Image 1: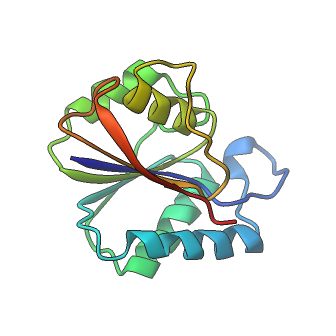
Image 2: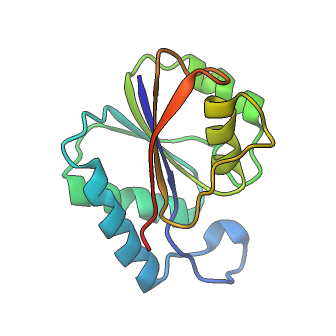
Image 3: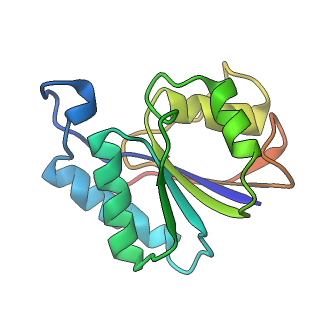
Length: 152
């Protein structure tokens, strides 16, 4: 199984609410640049946070890849999401190739949990960072970090 974790691109510093922050032009450029690393990958589903900047990031990836597979907004993929809720949801997925577009600190914590088996050893995910994890199962400490790429 492969799981790609993508942190949204750079977002404007303020909006009416945190959930409504949009990507900056630089953020859009960075997402396009990092999407190149997903080309020719057998993605089956894109899971994405409901927040605007993550939705915009996922849409750019979808366009750049010409992706026509499943695209699902998941309410648990926000900055302060509960790791247990995410793991329960991900455990029920049957796909073997998933992309999750989400936020810090959640994305770093989730990646660290899957690779190291503990919450306090998170992955360093800057905006537009893409982590590729691979393993037999989505479980604590059972995934291997294949690559970690940063847009800049």
